[in-house]
Length: 349
Image (cartoon, rainbow, N blue to C red; front, side, top):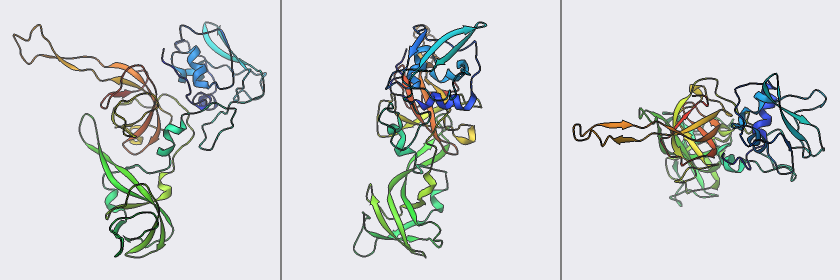
C-alpha cells in the first residue's frame, strides 16, 4: 500500500462538498483498515482515507453525513472516523470531537499553523503563469525588437521596445520564450509549445514600437521574446478530485522542474487536455508502458518475432491545470518507477 502522507486535506473534503455521500458496494477497502480512527493534529484527509480505502479519492462514495452534526464538511482533530456496514454496504461516518478544524479547501494563501501541510508548494509556480501556448499563438503576440543602444539583453530595470501594443487596457505582462514542443506520444502531432517564463514587464507607452520596462527577470531577455498579459495565467487553486467524466487514454510527454526520475509530487505534462474532457481535479491512473521484447523461443524461425508486454499500474496523478490539448498533473503516489511515455487512463480502465 503506497503512503499518502502529506497530501492535501482538501482533496477529499472537496469531494464531500461536491457530491455529498452515496454508499457504494464496489469501493475496495484497505485490507489493514481500522474500525475507528481518531483524527490528530497534522493528519490530512488523504491520509485518513488511505487508512480505510484502497483508493483515497473514493472517500465520498462511502461517506455518511451524520445528521446530528451541524456542519459535517469540517473535520477536526479529536473527531472519530468510524467504519461500518449498513445493508451490506460500506459506510464511513464521523463522531464529532474537538473544535480545532482542518480546512476543507486548498488555498494559495498561508494556512493556519495548526493545519497539516498541503502539496501546493509542488504546484504553486505552475498555477499563475501561461506555460503552454497553442500552435500558432506565439506568432500573434507582441515581441521585443530592441533594448536600445546600451543593452543587447534585457535584465531588471532595462527598457525594451516592442512590436506592437496599441491598447493600454493591459499594463502588466509576462515575457516568455517559445520552448519545448509538446507532441502526442503516439501520433507525434504537435499539441502546443512551452512558454518559457523570462520575466515580468510594465507597459510605459503604447505604439509600434511600444515601450516596456523589465520589472523582474528570471533569465535574461532576448530579442524576439514575446509578451502575454499577466492575467492570462490565472488558474484554479482549489481542487475536487474525481474520475474524469469522459474516458481518457493518454501519455506523460514531459516532466517539469528538470527532474529525470518521476516520483511522488513531481509535475508531469500530459498529451490530453480540456478539449479531451479533462478538468482540474480529475484523477488518472498511471500505467508503466509495457516493453516490446523478443520471443527467444521462436527467434530461430523468425528473427523479428516480438511480444508486446502489458502495461502495469505505476501510480496515480491528479490533473491541476488544463490547456486546450495539454494538461499538467501532480503525481500523488508512485508504486513503481514512472517514465516519460508511460500511459495515463481513467481509474476504472
